[in-house]
Length: 126
Image 1 (cartoon, one colour):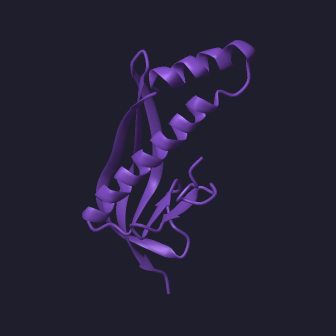
Image 2: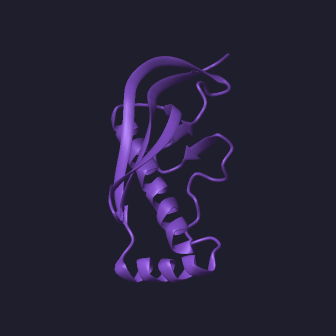
Image 3: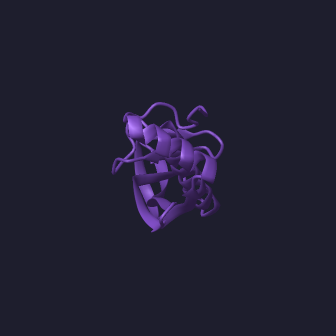
């Protein structure tokens, strides 16, 4: 499994490739929001290939965690976050706050994963 570029979950991540703070909270400790840029989103649509679906189907007969789908979900969430961060950075944001995820079934074997939040500019509190 890939190492999570956002570190361990604590409600707040720092994504080093874009130098952004990504947070599920309304604020970033030690900073004030100086400007709200707007809503940003990252979207991906993923599907497990035929081989993965067969392996997952066999595994589901015996119960337990379906690793093929866990990996698919983790990779989709990571890609949606990266796309959201990329859009925020291109708008000049320092952070994205109030980050949420959503997912929808598009077809029998396709899922849409969306990461969205509010892109903001920050200033350090003195």
